Image (cartoon, rainbow, N blue to C red; front, side, top):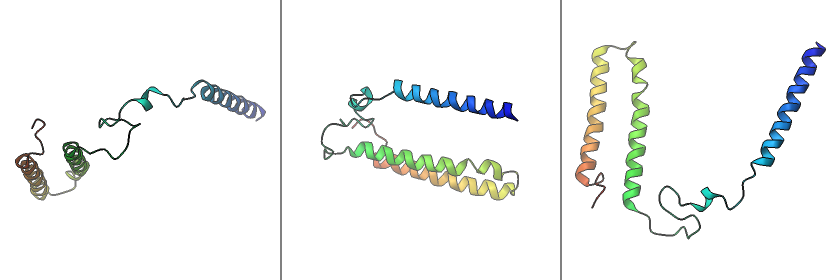
Length: 117
């Protein structure tokens, strides 16, 4: 019993020492390279936040979010195939895919997917 207690104390001490060494050696400064670089959207983080926003970037971001959400709706359908009627499942799945394709067709007609204008 004493051996387990001493081993856990030694392990705890080693963890505390390693945590302290890590915190001392990895202090981040304010002039970090990542903080001085522009964001992914191209804005400079040091300038005013009231610059005009690109509507093209906004549309692409919204389209990405929409198709990301639909992917999270499609993934559980794999588990449902074992317990559901195959005819009902295929009908619902085809309607869902048709709605997505109609949305994609609508975005293409509106010009949201054109990168070069």
